[in-house]
Length: 340
Image (tube, rainbow, N blue to C red):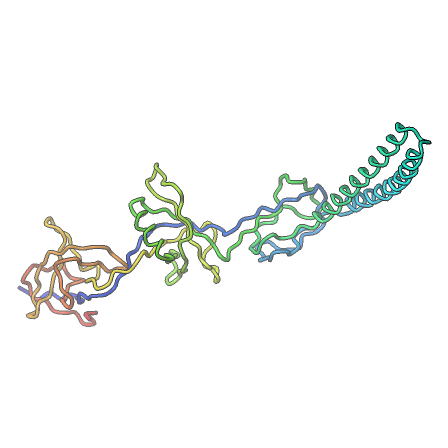
């Protein structure tokens, strides 16, 4: 039989992680839709679309003049009613002495005292009106409630806004940190809860079509019920996202690491073949002949497959060129063969 050129590698013993893979969707850590709390004319916009803003930064300004006038009116009412209340309280004091001396009737004294109490209540009402006017005046300057990135500006200077109504002025998404939502089959729920009780579970988010682009995070949320329509449990991981690789709405591959399994035998996944009798590999013997050997496989992690039985560490398996092989065929290793 002719010699068959092949590529081969050795089965090795190593520690492999126990992982769960899923597709996740990135979600902003916090999302705020900015609305006006007073009705008025927008006079200024202090940011650009897509700009990063910090908590407390001024975003919009609404025309303050109507609210300044309302504040002046409330302050004038307060001053007027305060003077009336002082006069009523003095009259009540005088009538109290007259009533004690028996000069003034009880009905007149009660009427004067009730009027004084009413005037004091008016003063308190005016003070509340002043506080409300100041609050409305403060609402004319709209500030960012969070650190985040702004979206499209939906209202420009010259537009009239209504209190707590549409249109929304702008939407701010907090990107640092950030959430990734994903779901795993309910069969993994018990394992996830068991390992999470021991410590924080590491989660890696791999960005498709970007080699080496990944983020490390931690599992922070497990839903309180299983979705009985899909048989999955919803989970959420939190990522620092300091480099902003993750973006809201983006789909990423999630790798949830539960634990590590030490001293297992692994081979490249390309070495595994399937026949009617099950899975097998071609083992290269010391005399450079190929031997077909049945194996039992476990999990596949990052291009490597765990072999639970059928191989020993150090044995050489064919990873490329199996189509031309039969048991007992002589093989030769190709130049540049990655055998270890």
